[in-house]
Length: 282
Image 1 (cartoon, rainbow, N blue to C red):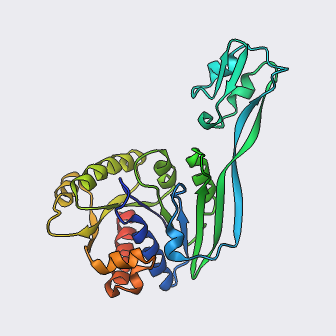
Image 2: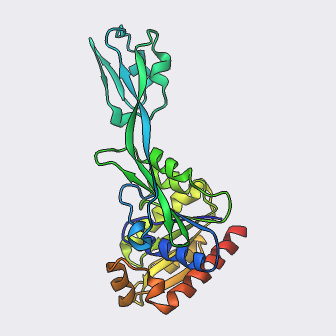
Image 3: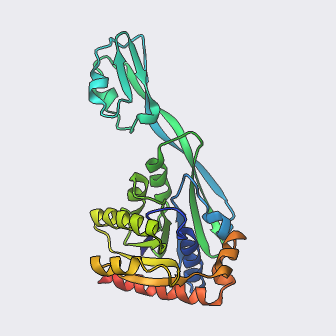
């Protein structure tokens, strides 16, 4: 089963849930792989403390123009919908940050003046974290090509067992790239007006890709009653409400797992997995 843990906004506790769920299932002898797809700010390693044993660089192809062969016909610029190649008079400019790596500019060039060269955007690292198999991506500073790095992380998805994918926050392309192969998406939300607003956006995104999904309310408190009426109205099940608990916050601040300091947390995670599996099969 492939479970993506997502959220419409940052700071909802998505990584807390993802890491504790992975360890709780591993303690029950499930083969578990944790994939940190939040490649711009990976932090699952803070809690799982893996031993990184392997690392590989990830590159994307970008265009390079041979000025001596180029006749400035402009076909490359006409083809590129992202303006990664622009022909301005006697100059051909390339903007690798805008390139989506389709290779079309080199195909339409009648003079063979464009070739693709690799540009490193980040690294994928992996190794054991106790009984959990750990994988993470790290986007290099100054790079903007997030989806290719997420795809590289997802090449480590196991064929069997349970995969926990910690998605980036929000609803943009990196989130869609993370969840698109999931069997189930758990949306972690906080009971605030901002949390409700961003949950609505996240629900719209997940429904576009047509993946079974449900909500977990983190830091639930009597004052935050915004989420349940919305979920009831649109027919989204709430699988778990984790109460606001100072012990959990202190554990998070120390970079530790809540299941090791809050006795009830492990039971919550096991119950959550059973409910997700049931919802995925409905």
